[in-house]
Length: 251
Ligand SMILES: NC(=O)c1ccc[n+]([C@@H]2O[C@H](COP(=O)([O-])OP(=O)(O)OC[C@H]3O[C@@H](n4cnc5c(N)ncnc54)[C@H](O)[C@@H]3O)[C@@H](O)[C@H]2O)c1
Image (tube, rainbow, N blue to C red; front, side, top):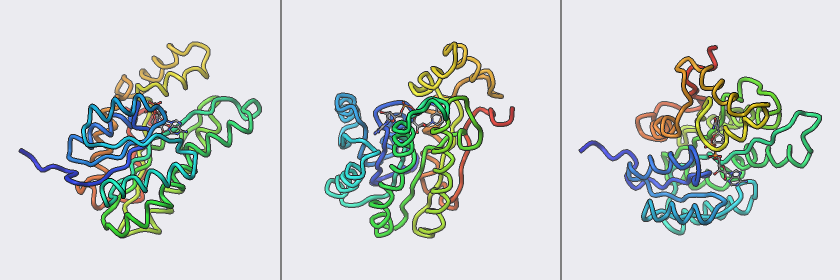
């Protein structure tokens, strides 16, 4: 049997009840990670706790400061240490600059960007104490290019990379901080995103065909990269935004 990559590593995974967050939770669990999972849907959270025995589900809204503190506290009260933050929760906030309500702009920035600041603020002292911690932000290729009717999404995803670099510099060498930048991945979010187009089904098919590799990514494709980036195999990688997009940025 090969090495168990995350033996006894305590990992917080947000956005864990759906899409990439769920695939990441499963991948970390398989490698021995002890998981604290965050999501909004309690029923889906319970199902996940049953699927991955020994994991703890903490319901909450990542845009809420106190819920982030609760998540870190729960990791410590349950497992007594903290090693990994895998931050996947995200929303789209669809609408052009003129049409997008200001409340929706603020909410999107809260969920996609401020949530990362909030949880990092509470988790970093503990990660430093437990030495060897790592933070992995699920950003997007939207950090590098625009998409119609996604101003809040693109702005927030771009800013996550600036925050990632800032934290990588400030908390090295104890803590590694990196970001994933996925292209089109087959999750509920891409189908919501396609609603910004006249014909959503065609928009998703077009996104798949626009990749060099002619398919959407799967949540599992991304989970493999996430596992690599938080593991010891990536111990010399920090401050990096890693694209995983079927080559779409090169088209
Ligand atoms: N699917 C794609 O094509 C794609 C591409 C690039 C980046 N991403 C990013 O990947 C991450 C995961 O998204 P996904 O594609 O797996 O979609 P998804 O819809 O399956 O997952 C997003 C998760 O975030 C959660 N969430 C949203 N708002 C929240 C809040 N306020 N509090 C707590 N949780 C909240 C949702 O409940 C859901 O579980 C997101 O940050 C997204 O922006 C997705």
